[in-house]
Image (cartoon, rainbow, N blue to C red; front, top):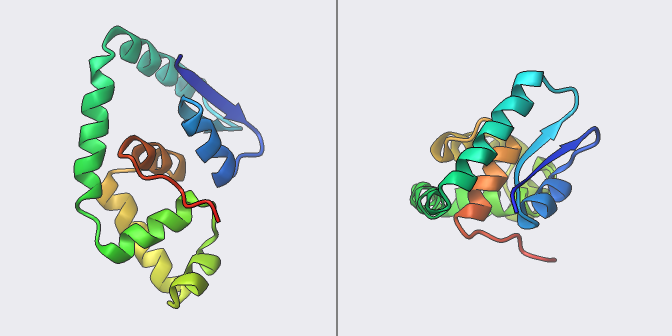
Length: 131
């Protein structure tokens, strides 16, 4: 079942749970009407072509291969819902360095938002480390 999630108080752990539960998009309020229409169009397109999910997962996995080991560590921290400062502390690097790695991860994965990055990472098979 394809789902969209709309919330007024979204955070990374909530987005991860929604995506793992099968959500195809995570929209935070306030949102534009066009955003809802675009999500619905994407959902109907996926229903029409279930094979597209496999190709989307393959595309996400190939993008994941572009990431450096450090960028993967930063991505795992983001999937765990950690803020940049916590990721920096865990990896023993500065918060500014985490910001740089995070920007590179977003760029290499082709994600325009954190929720899109989470969706791509989950589609590629990356799972948050339960700590």
